[in-house]
Image 1: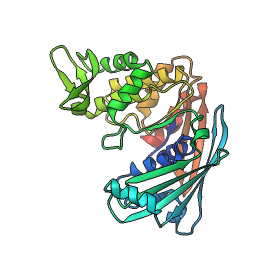
Image 2: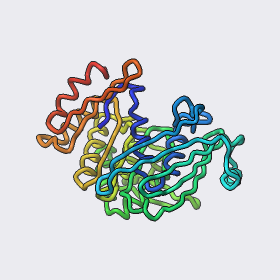
Image 3: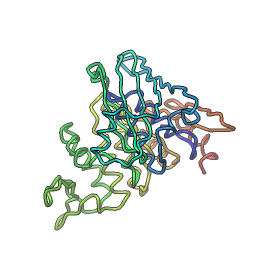
Image 4: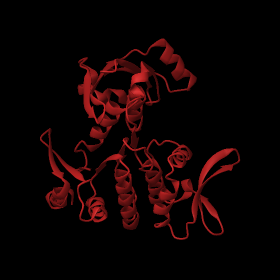
Length: 317
């Protein structure tokens, strides 16, 4: 758990992890830029001082069972003709602003990501064979308005992982009268529906908190050895739903999934402590504080995690 107030750098850490650990760094670069819809020409924020001095950005991670990896990003203001054509085919908004190249070592993989003014992007990737052996890393942002994977695709992934029943059970404990969650075809569109005794409702028409909980439960259906990065899973959550979210997180960890989440919610930390019970060994808390431009981090490991709440309380309340 990455715990800290607003603007402490929590989201940036998740962005670095998904780019550094992704099987498709070119796509990951695009996704972390595109999810900041309020920024125009958003690729520049990846670089110090907007990349105006030409300095590259470097991300270094250590992947379990794979080893260290370094991703070096460079910014160009010209877009390659082939990527420019693909942006036009997607009817992206001109002008096309930037192209970010990623070099991944030790796999010697090269990726390119081109951006339009509104952060629409396309990418290509070379030497992908080595990258496919890297464990799955996915970034999950359940907040309303965030850029999401199609829920129908996430639902199908949960089915293929054999974890659909577990996901439905967690949601049913929060939604009164819910009997099942189904994938249906409505007028040629694939819709995820909440099924009750005498009616059904598309998940997209449920409250923001229920949409968030459903997405989190399905997104955590990650194969053992993979990593799920959760951005503020407490968003829009009722306290009872928050407890179920904590249970879904712990269940994924017990299956061998590494879950890294960012939050400024002491309630979520309380829920995770309650779900862990006496065995706090799966839990680590990194408390971030940004003071005078310097990012500081304090780590609370295992049994020490119980003290993180008191230490962070004044910072977050």
